Length: 290
Length: 162
Image 1 (spheres, rainbow over the protein chains, first blue to last red):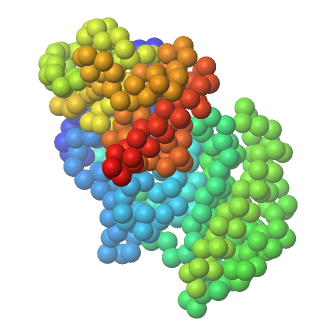
Image 2 (image 1 turned 120 degrees about the vertical axis):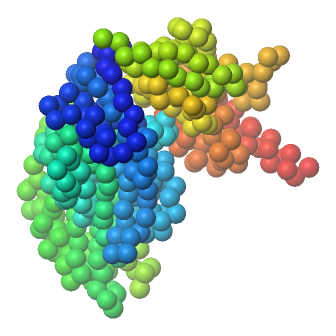
Image 3 (image 1 turned 120 degrees about the horizontal axis):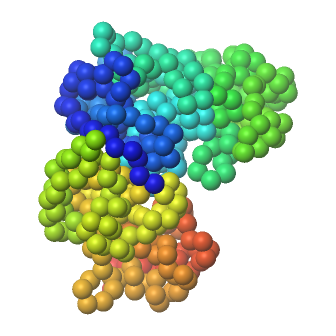
């Protein structure tokens, strides 16, 4: 199907892009269009004006900054992130994740920023970025604000971003311990996914802190606080047992939808399986880094 | 309200300059305006790969690409990889190995395999499967397609060895 007509702007600065989108919701930012154009073709989204951000320099940068954080420009494609040397060195699990988003054509043009802004619950990056404790940089007409990845998605297909705020960058601290991601999917979108990031005690051998996020079950990624507490200070070799001891209680706390990906009980069970597979992978890497 | 925009791009090595409405999709421009019917529309939602074209060498879903996005860039379609007097080595391999049944998905597969072998002339079995994961064959002839691709890899090795 054809999208209904719109006008098209290709500004070269962030300020011009924000102005072109306008403050009464008539325009939308556009980059890869892998989600947006689909919705426009199905006529569930209409816009008067598409504002292409691909002509703005700097939004496709990936750098390790002076504060030891990784900055990823919002319009970096999945392909670009998967192949980036800094991401492969410092966050290989994110590189692998991006190398497995949807299919090769979507990865050629689809961007990590667009993926986040669409707020699709069955997506790979939001769960990982929440586990990595990422912040999203939003630039609007009056200034810049930072939103934690945990807070960014408000509900299904809805984020806290205002229509005239441009997501310019995603920033997260350089991981210092194992980061893992596992998913189960039907078709191309994850039915359930789990991401886990550990920081390690200075002398190794024990986990200092753990961030565990489960995605695609409700409207946005959820933390497993009980598991995170159980892993704090836990020796790496005991991680799996520590998780198993609290797993049933932890899974009970999850808010799980029934949807076409499966019933709530089934998907809750899958989350547990995927969490333990994350643990196995993290334990191997944790032992290796000693 | 039709916002007309000038675009100029390379289509299979030939420069095309024209004015188009902003909401024109690449597949419609190429098939209906420019008359190249080799590219097939099937799922219309970036899942099946039948409409695969190459944009600056990267595979894209032309059903969900705005034509304005190819301005100043290079587009390659199935017509562009087919020599005037025969078949490309990828097409030849599909014929030899029976890598097609009804043929509707074939142009998309040929484009994807062409891009894969350009990016990685010696893909592993796993890399072939991973790259082609997003191309669907509803006749489910995947084994023959895989064997066709595999034959190109082996052929390349023996050339090197010689």
